[in-house]
Image (cartoon, rainbow, N blue to C red; front, side, top):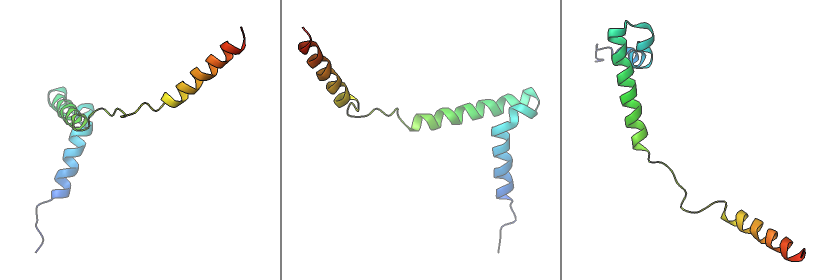
Length: 77
């Protein structure tokens, strides 16, 4: 038998409150929506560390440019 508790409605209202509550609710209640959204955002950003490549993707290009510049200087005295 199916449960009578409206989980989808509660979830939808929660998402609306967190996402847009500070825009249409009175400031006394709306500020908690903003604080909740900021806390969720900070937590989600903290889950993913800043990505830094293990290698220098431009090293080969920079080396080629340096070689060409050195060849050009040595050819033109």
